[in-house]
Structure formats: C-alpha cells, structure tokens
Image 1 (spheres, rainbow, N blue to C red):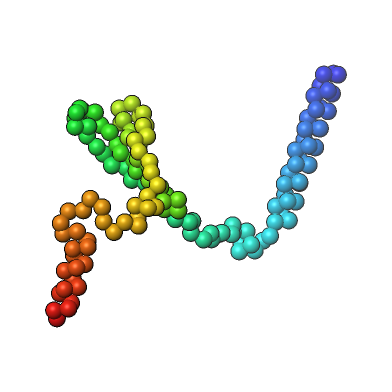
Image 2 (image 1 turned 90 degrees about the horizontal axis):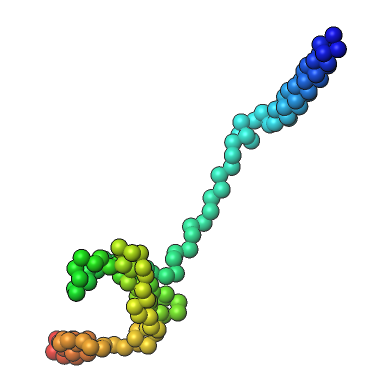
Amino acid sequence: MKRKMKYSIIWAFSLLMLSFFVLLIWGQALAQPTNLLESIPQVVVRPPAEPPKWLVDFSPYEDPMNPARKIRVITVVDPESKRIVVYHEDLATGQVKLLSCRNIQNDLLLDQFNAVSPTPSEIETDLRRFKNQN
C-alpha cells in the first residue's frame, strides 16, 4: 500500500510539473506578436566586400627535365607594396617551394627592358614621324 501511495505522489507531482510547463510555454506563445510581419526575420543587407588586395594566379607547369612531374606555379602580386612572389607546388606531394620574390616598384618605372625590335621607344619615334608627315 505504501508503494502505491508513493507512486501516486510521484505521478501527481509529475502531472503538476507537466501542466506547469505547458502553461509556461502556452503563456510565452500568447506573449509573442500576432502580426506576421513582426514575426518574419529581418534581412540584413551588407555592402559588398572589399576586392582582394592581392592578385593570385595558379598555372600548371610541366618540368622539362621530368614531364611526369606535375608542378603548379603560384604567383602572388601585392599591388600596395609592389611585390611579386612565385612558388612551385609539387602536385604529387603537395610541397610548396619559394622560387622567387622581389620588389617590382622600380621595374614599373621602366619604359622598356630586354625588349625586342620594335621597342616601345622605336614605336613612339615612328608615331611622331608619322604625325609630323601628315
């Protein structure tokens, strides 16, 4: 008999707690806005992200000494600091090797270097002659 009474108390307590939680949840549901426009999540429009500051190029390359070895050339250019960096990535092993890096700021000041004929200065001279003739 004591056992039945013990279970009755537990069931009564459980039923009381269940009804409490149902009323609690029901009360929160009634407190929510009934206007559908207020319940729709707001869309946040963000300005476009900044364009990347670095330029990166991935080019496949075959090693002339070993055509079976596949290499990718990774070139990174930073326009702000005027630097260029070149890496070789071995596609079989994933190993990346720094091949070259340099500041190209002064390179960009050159009009011509290692140019073949017609060089930019020869073309400019020819254009001036052509304009003077007409």
